[in-house]
Length: 284
Picture 1 (cartoon, rainbow, N blue to C red):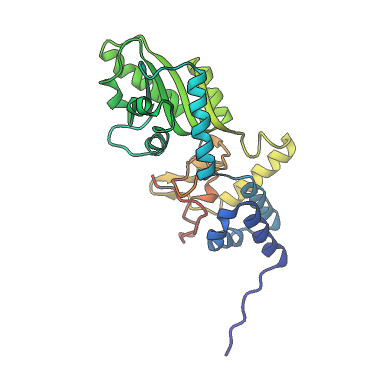
Picture 2 (spheres, rainbow, N blue to C red):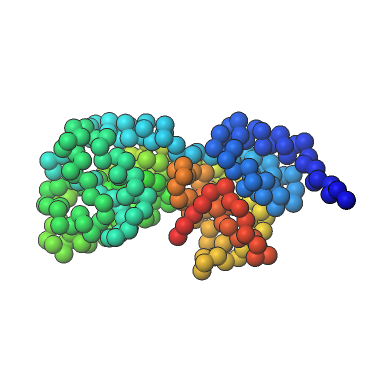
């Protein structure tokens, strides 16, 4: 006895074609995209996801090349010298995160490269032994979300330097990409110059009018209600609309997804306990 194949509505099939056309990386995730569409109860939910995925910023190799070029230009325009400047990843000691991985890509792109590549430091504790009074510190992360982490890391580095009697330093902040509200938070709370090659607005509330944005966020929370309440001691409520309600649509290609991204794209557990194949992957 033959088993009837499940029919896919024409409009859903068209969604797949449209998204692959707009976001070529999606073609490698047809199963994940299908699962995402299948958990939606209404066409409205599917269309919201289609709109957001269409606007997604995937940081691929071409974007990386341009970001490194523009960061080099920014460092030159700031008038920074390799003789008294350190570019420091925001990582903790012994940690390999987006800041260390990003700095590794950046270290031979700042000119003159023979001099600047020796002025990069892979984590904050390691910087303390090298920084001296009068030096300039460029704190680097690959992505700025809410901006609170960068401010906290600056304060931490400051406290470590003060224990070594180092008090006269100047700070700058760099990132490949960041949320505009997070970049503004750093400027407001440090008074320092901040440069992010890509500046992203909140995907809903900073793009649509108040009424439409309210309806869209309500729809998104309805979709999020299908996800598991907890996963590995994390609570979905803390990541609704992305951490700090960042509404981020961003990821480095083939890398760890920031928790600022809408969790429907990376939270791997449904409310009934079954696994969800996700478009993006987040570890930690």
